[in-house]
Image (cartoon, rainbow, N blue to C red; front, side, top):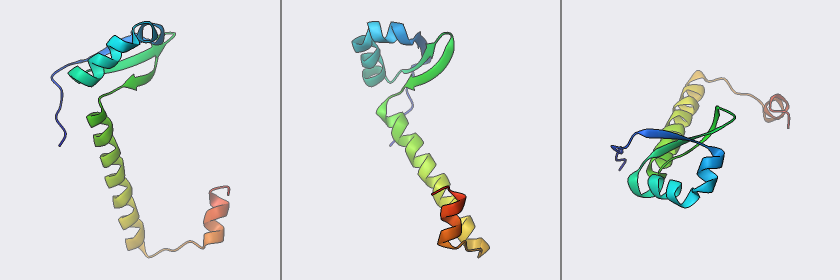
Length: 89
């Protein structure tokens, strides 16, 4: 079950996070803090607790499943060769 952390999101430059990686990881893993990482002032990544990642993945799976169900309801079928061509395979 997902449990939202009471901690707020913080931000660090990639260099700061690298210099003190163990502490940054401890903040994320033990305290549930979310850390936004930036390079040259632009946010490029985030460190999040595993529970947050699992929730995100579950939400993505649910959205994918809903899209598949809607596509199946439409009754429209695409031949395999057309799908491969459309996807550039």
